[in-house]
Amino acid sequence: MGKKFWNVAKYVLSLALALLLVWLVVRKIDWKSFLEGLRNTRWVYMPGFTAAGVFALVFRALRWNQLLKPLDGATSFMDCWDANNIGNLGSLVIPGSCEPIRAGLITSKKLPFQTVFGTMIMERAWDFLYIFLTIVIALVLKLDTFGGFVSDNIIKPIVSSTAVWLILTAAVILVAALIWACFRYRTKVKFFDRIATLIEGVVQGFRSFGKMKNKLPYIIYTTMIWVMYMFMCYFCLKAIPELSGLDMADALFLSAIGNVASVIPVPGGIGAYHYLVMLCISSLYGLSNETGLLFATLNHEGHAVIILALGIISYLARMIRKKK
Image (tube, rainbow, N blue to C red; front, side, top):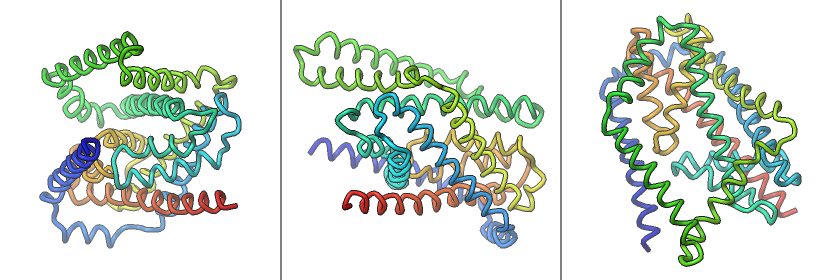
C-alpha cells in the first residue's frame, strides 16, 4: 500500500510540475499569432525532421547493443530497438519509466536487471557529456550569440545559489552514507543486502564500456545520435520562416538546451521543453514567444509522434515474435 501511495504521489507531483510549466508558457502567448505562424509553416521540411528522428533512435539501439555485447552476445539489435521504443512509449506517460521498462525487457539469465540498468547509467553519462560538448562547440562557433544566455540563465543561477549547493552536498553525503551502510551491514540487514547486490550489478553494467574490445563504434554511434538531434532542430528552424535564417550552430545549441529539459521529471517533457526553448529563442534572437513556442511544439510533438508510432509497432512486433 505504501509503495503504491508513493508511486501515485510521484506521478501527481510530476504532473503538477508539468502543468505549472505549461501555464508559464501559455500565459504569455497570443494564440492568433501562434496559429498564423502554424499556417505559414513550411511542412516540406518535416520529412527530413522525421528521418533524423528515426535515425537517432536507430543509433541509440546500435549503441546500447554495443554495450550489451560483452555481457551477453545473444542480445540482438532488434531486442535493443524494441526495448528502446517501448520504453520511450512508457516515458510519454510516466516520467522515469523508460529505463526500468527497457531493463525489464532485456533482462535474462545472463543479464540480471541491475546489470542491464548499469549499462543505461553508462549511456546517460555519455549523454550528459555530449550535452556539455555541444554547448561548448556552439559557444566556440558563436560566443557573441550564446555567451550571455548561458552565463545569465545557466552559470550564474547555479554558482550564486547557496541552496542548490547545500542540497547537492547533502545528497552526496546521504548517498555515500547509505552505500557504506549497505556494504557494512549487508549480512545483518536483508534490505541492505538487496541494495548492495543492486549496486554491484549496476557497477558491472557500468563497466561494460571497459570490456568492449573496440570502443570506436560506440563513440561513433553516440556522436551520430547528437548529429541527428542537430538535424532535427535544423529542419524545424527551416520550416519556420522567422527562424529559417539560422544555421547549424544555432540548431546545435538549441538541441543541447532542449535535452537539458529531459532532466526535469515531467511526463514526456511536456512544459519543461517548451518553456526552456521558448525562453532561449526569445532571449537569443529577440523573436516573439509565439515563434519560440511554435518551434518547440514542432520539435517536441513531432518527436512524440515518432516515439508513439515506433513504440506501438515495436510492442506489436515483440508480441508476434513471442507467439511464434
